[in-house]
Length: 164
Ligand SMILES: [Zn+2]
Ligand SMILES: [Zn+2]
View 1 (cartoon, helix red, strand yellow):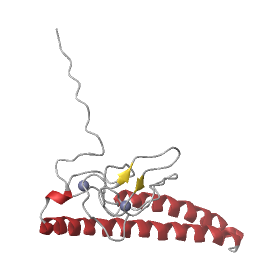
View 2 (tube, helix red, strand yellow):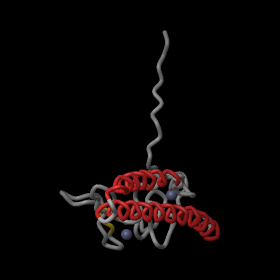
View 3 (tube, rainbow, N blue to C red):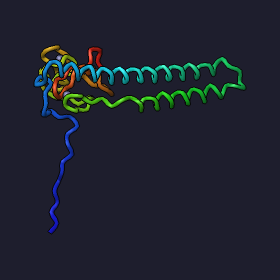
View 4 (tube, rainbow, N blue to C red):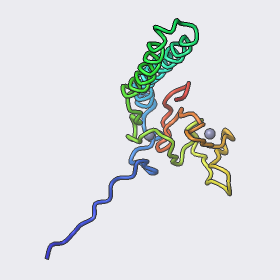
């Protein structure tokens, strides 16, 4: 008889990764943080280029109110093309992955606070999101995440002073 084995896919967030940032030597930690800084910089640049293209598209659309009727349609085409381009540019943003524990940096939370890096995230309360007892921030989410990612929530590595 054929036997079936179930291979569960690995969790997206390793809540207990093999390697915590605190286990590393300080030099290794700062090497990993600065490597991430380059990725974060690129991520920010591409996001802001996309934002400028989107703004340009909106401005182009607004010119439809002032240009002669003969070129009116081009304002609309320019606006749509610009909006599509702004969205397409985002594809070139690098994936944000922790260089220490390979955790995907998104809105999932592990034991470390993504804002201050302390291992101090408390469980969520009734109607209240998780809270950090160190920096007192709550990890609110709307349609997208509201808190910033400055540290890896899985291993605690400090990643980026400005936050993403
Ligand atoms: Zn915190
Ligand atoms: Zn990590």
